[in-house]
Figure (tube, rainbow, N blue to C red):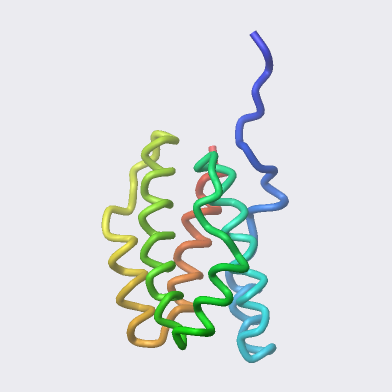
Length: 126
């Protein structure tokens, strides 16, 4: 039997300090959040085993729809995180997709990203 890696992506490429991510997002007037989102897409795609989240598509559609597509993506990311938690045998945050959507609708997408990053960090805790 081969030694399978415990995770499909290295923790150093996935885990981040949520407070630092929030601070950098505020200091850069939201520009850092684009890079943060890209990292989250990479991590979720690795755990899902498919390319469900496409960065360029997300970026373009978010710009064209004035952020509406981003709200939808936040919902999908919450749903994906819950599915991954189930696959890992962790207790899922059942309402994460709804929480992410509601925070996005009221303009707090960065808070949704922080909650999602916290859950992603939990993928690597043993």
